Length: 337
Image 1 (tube, rainbow, N blue to C red):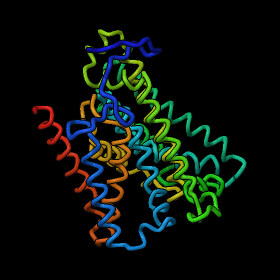
Image 2: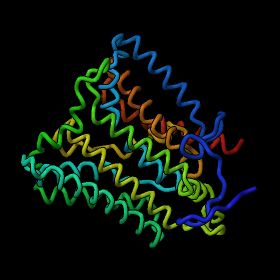
Image 3: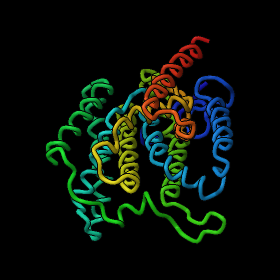
Image 4: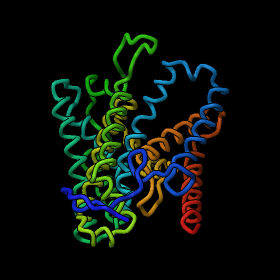
């Protein structure tokens, strides 16, 4: 039996509640239990390979490196759980970093205005993706692939194929630095604080009526529409969240690696891999945002372990591809059972 709530986004059909979404407590589709077990096993393996991994400063440094991917996965979750994809986030990250360097050009006074501009640009790209997908009825795969190509071409044309300008130290501190002098921890990275804030907001959003409608739209858009849910508006908001998450991730990555055309390369597929690894069902309607973020943390841990084992970084793409194929296969089997 379903209940309906009057919400700004329409009626909210009742859906399974979980850690910020439609996660389930067992082993079924959307459950976070499998990824939790995998994460624990990987953390044990990394701890064996690198005994000082659990020292607070080392562990926080790991979380700092993982923060951009986890934030991207949170944004990608909103789109995937609604039944869509966002393939533009990698090129958006690259565009944001290149734009920031060009506009700041080493001037500290330009840092905050440019950060506001970057967040607004991320929202704008998300809005365009959402409107084209929902109003023109274009499959999100095509819409965001087109946006990916537009951003790549625009950035190359604007810069002439070579990034120009420089990021100020004030901009890069969000990815590099933190609050010093914290007892036991030594330094609490800003990236970890940003990650914590994003996680809280994402979980609260999915526990709200908006989250319930989003899951209902992903599970059965026709039924959600019949109940009065404004499906187009909800899906557009999901793309806005994805674009904003990409902008935040770009600000952190700019601090890590500086200005490069490769800074966002492949991140769209890495984020999708993380989401499905976290138990979110491709096609929408099942999975929690907490699971998606745990999936990103698990993927980062796996890549760290492979690096510690001396496995070539070139294999990371193959590993991600295998994870996606396995997730699709498992999800199909779960739905049949």
